[in-house]
Length: 185
Image (cartoon, rainbow, N blue to C red; front, side):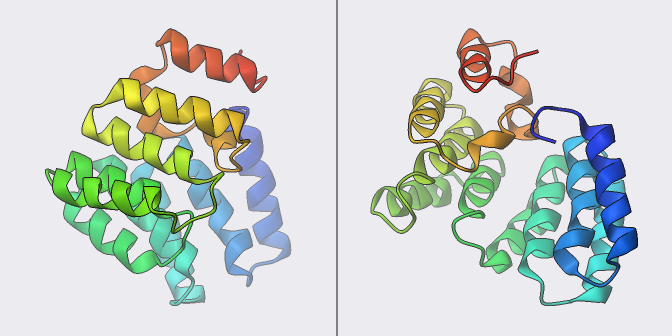
């Protein structure tokens, strides 16, 4: 999936879900890949099935909020993301949602919280980058992505497929990060 081979990833996740139809994290995979393929309505449909399987599984809320964010349904996005309670994975998406939904003060407050040390140090730059991209502060966002790369952030491995980065894919700084991570085409 991180390399962009999403059709293969989707087939693998669907097979895993066939083999293990009751484990929520296994069944999350197809919805996750559908989001990376920009098929948000289908992803939301799959996530609805996960609520039936386990209504308290926090990854469902995180991914549902992320799907609504990409669709531009910011009210639903922020509601779901605020309920996700999945630190350290949620904050970049939540801050991005605040930023693009006209709530920059909440996005900046989240930046301050992240910088104050509420998460593992290697995760913070990635989240800050997502928020800065939402705020339209591209230079700061790329500084954070570069730092995330240097710190080997475990969340940076999605850099090639994240929808939040669609608008900067032709930027030479983005291409340099992909090359550095051996993810360039």
